[in-house]
Length: 152
Image (cartoon, rainbow, N blue to C red):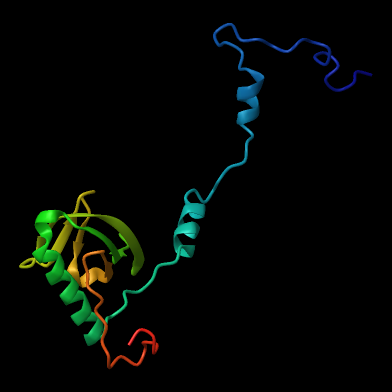
């Protein structure tokens, strides 16, 4: 009795004359894992990324910043060095982050309410949280309850 496939079981594997044999590396790549949800990991990482809400300054803090900006305006010809902490909105989602940068001021536009640093950063007055510079006199408000006795 003839067994199944007895006539072909010992034949060599057929080789195509029209196509070059595929390398073992390429054959293995056919069976690599398939990412059905492409981009899912990136979307998950973006969702997990934290942003902050902008801080609304009180009247005293705004007055402080205004005095400092006036001082900078009077010394703008000297290109004063300044450290600015400002809010930078996130381009992808609500909120943003506070950034601190130290550089010389190139220009200050009081009409459009922005300042331009030497590195090309344009910062709007409404986004500024804090300004520090060696030019500023000590602006201490005696009535502030947050100052220590030494600072008054």
